[in-house]
Image 1 (cartoon, rainbow, N blue to C red):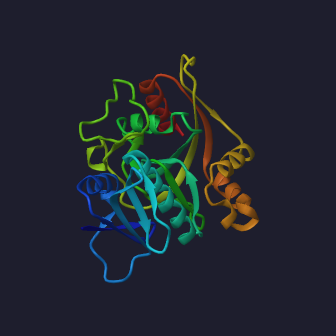
Image 2 (cartoon, rainbow, N blue to C red; image 1 turned 90 degrees about the vertical axis):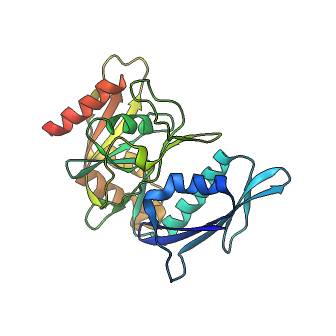
Length: 275
């Protein structure tokens, strides 16, 4: 059995795997956050195995919790990430977790937030080819004291193939549900430190758009949108509303109406250069 250790948001996670396919999946997704084995007990401890329980091939068990079974690698990875995310939100309830992509440009973090299917990950993938560096694709935990964003550099997830000018690399891992680009196959650097939040782009994809556009939005609207995309609002004072407002007032916020990906990426870069 292979044993891996990871550090996420200053918490340690140990994952025990008994199968080569699971090993490859775990390392491919989380390798950038891998650390040497620790002497102290981990904050979270998982055992991942292959089984044959009623045709459910994969088994995920967090120590102390009921095991969960799934029939394919895509659902298995989804369940692992979901369980891990919820557990980390509890362990780090001081952080304000946002569902967002976090990219670095000129030593500042810029968030991309969108509804499901709104083009967040695809837009992030394009921007990584235009001078942006990678911090996270899914989670952007905010340190409220200084408005920095914790890095979470797991593999970038795509649900569909991006346009042909931004092809996925051969190293991309394909599961039954999603495609994952390992960090070492990305066309950019990966942030090694937490960095200050500078701006938030609320991404809206519309296939009828002729040209991409960026529109400034008020702190009030941004507060509502930040709150709607929080993951642990209730862990904070006033059910997270005060924290959402602080984030919205600290960062400039914009609507990003996307069109052709290359034009969208160049527009965002030029816009930030002038900002």
